[in-house]
Image (cartoon, rainbow, N blue to C red; front, side, top):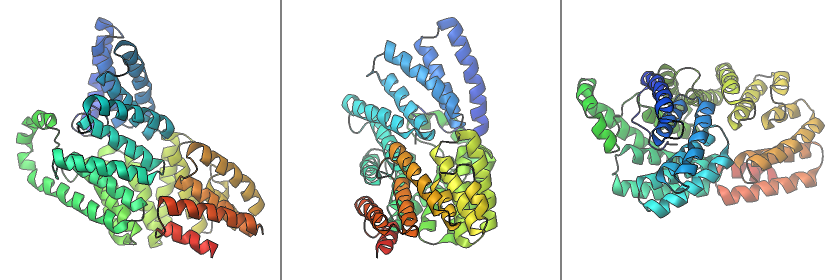
Length: 434
């Protein structure tokens, strides 16, 4: 998900230097120009973007809210600077897991930019891509796919097949295909992206980097970036391809890629960065598939603790991390730890309770969880469907067979509509109904 007005990727060391400079610039502009001057707001927005790049999301959000309110007052709702700030705040809300707020903002940005700038303008395409990412996170995969296909077609036409933005969209579409169970299509796209990014690495040999550095401002103006093996876009694509291999059952191939991605992100972003924790969780899932349960548990403990500190107890990612850790405890026959884990009302913790024979307690909690999931994620989100299915299985264990069947049929109908009859999750539900 991209920020508006984002500079060429600087690397983490330079991003920290940028933060120091931007703090000084903001202080001086506040002093000499005033709090509401456009140049002061620009400096504030730049600092917010840098905080976002550094994973300091709450600081970024707080600044961006101030910028947006002032721009609305002084520039108006339809000014391009206001729309940029609105879009950036939407990105920050997305990263904080506040998806409904993010969707509200990005829909406004997309509609206004389409009206003011046209369908084909890069900022309109950026808004469309950001909105697609929100739909993806909300589990609205068909809507996400439709938007990404439009963005990809226009980027191929106006930017070319090999442009970094085109490759990013290809990777995003591959990620959506993977979630939809279209693993072959996903693999095809992601392999293509990875090959092209590696091609750019070969052309960008270290001996030519000095010359390329002098051209950096030109590349930025043209919307180009210098890619390489360690570039975050390359690592993102490798991670996506690893996820696809995982879905195809090619776990050894997935492991090789995910180990590389994790090592490089640790090196360039640090152990605590959210983009480091994501491949760490993916590698843990792959270790699960390979039967390396102890290694999986160790990684998941790290992810859980760091996300709890960085994101808070209620963020969707922390609930996912808890579920993964609960699953590890179950597989290691440590069911008591699974039950006692942090958030007791997580679906996977409840599933572990079922294995302890506590079906009545599980039922009571699952009803609460389902209400929360419906409220925050919506009726059709995969996480909501997972809870419905878990509750159905609990009803089955309690002998409430009619209620169990009703819930399974609800899940089946939604899965058939959203991901199709041939998706593995739909086939699993059909098996439960048989």
